[in-house]
Image 1: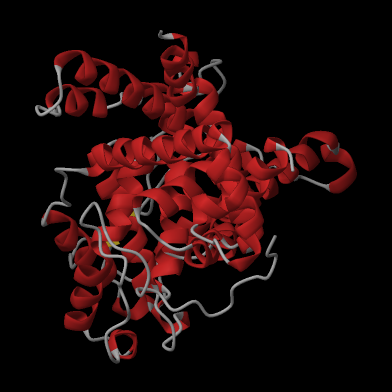
Image 2: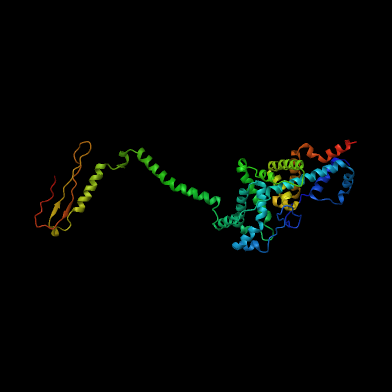
Length: 190
Length: 219
């Protein structure tokens, strides 16, 4: 029986307190062999110093009472959302911004790429727009019940020249009804 | 080597304590059930019952009291949030310790670079006054070497050493906490001790043998 075999077999058993009847032969060897005794002694000394080193790490420390207050506070909070729900929320948030932006970009690209002659006036010219507005205004100011009208007094019309120097595109007139004995003179345009 | 995996280890009936940390933390009657029903007083009792071993593990691994408190807090918040899934027939301590070690190593991975070993301060203060000065110095040196050696161990070996040598858990209990079999736990402890022993000065690795040889040389 060599010391190497004894050491292998016995060290763990000594270390973990698992000596039993199967160890008798090894123990008999250890009683005579000082090298094996030394090995076991060194192992025990190391274990004892290891315990001491570990105890020094924790001796004198206690968890603060504030820890319980923090635990209770956090435990009272609703459970945070899981990973998947967080992902879904972030995707939906992104979609809310990206979809309108993509639609606007698509519309802009389509308007830019298609000529106006092919598809009609996609963009209404400023002049046509103002003309339509003028017609609507005239209709609104038209007399519905001529018998009840006493007089129609025209308001001053305004002609706005274009910056380029062209003539006025339209005459802006408004009218309102006033009770007056004077005969109507009709609209006067300056 | 025993390779059977422990399934239902009864905690708290094993070895004596040396460091004041309760090994025998069995589950008080109906504590988890009361906690599952939303009883915050039961949760406080649960916290007070298990906070010490959890904090000790966190502190032994991280060596940072503040980080250990954060880990303690996270561990119990997690326990409360998954209280419906906690088993009521066994002690929750192995589960708590497993969560703690996982939290420790995930935090350490982020903070290792700035960690300062606080035990340097402590170990310089604590001294064995009954020993002679040269013995104290030698002992301090060895403890310091061991502290650095423990820090340098791989996480699984470090956990094994803390569970077995600090908490005093049995092999089966430590294996249950580490979620491995008893043989694996023995192996981790063996390699941890081997690595620590290699760090010791040569004269300390064979103290008894050297002393005997020196004695033999005397006339």
